[in-house]
Image 1 (cartoon, rainbow, N blue to C red):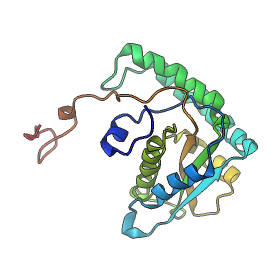
Image 2: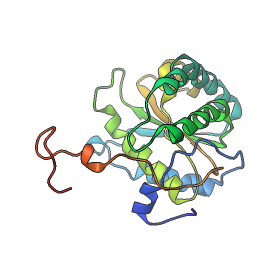
Image 3: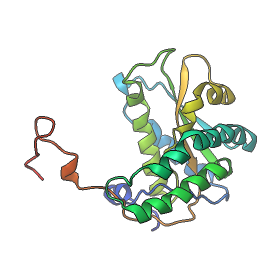
Length: 212
């Protein structure tokens, strides 16, 4: 499925692309993705986001070491023992496991990373992420619209201090997500999600929403 300008098609086919080609991605396209991030809302319109564009393979490799360590420590065993999520079943969920492991082993080979950071102070509160994850979603959508692949990754935050030091972040700034970006090896397609009625309530928690 090629590029698209239909926002609903983009959202409904934005599969996590964990297998990416190492081929270069033009700066022109990366700049469009970054602009989409800057167009996002933020609390009080403070715009305290900062975006790192990482192309240096050595920096990426240093981060990949922690990414792999967390896979071995917790993510891998969790995937092996957990039930399929809503909208999926055992077969496709089982196929997802090798893709997650592939990304883990080849994380640093994605030609470009965009690291979404926030100047959120020494002890960010519960709502801090609301001022950066909107930008992350905008960048994911822009990536899909351009025919590029990515997936939202936050695993590195398990070693947040170590990874933020590799990125050279100053005190009071933290990384919230890494988007590995490249040309996808696979194809975009319909997402697997459970029934909407299972996650939408009317007026109070647990009460059915009559609009569905």
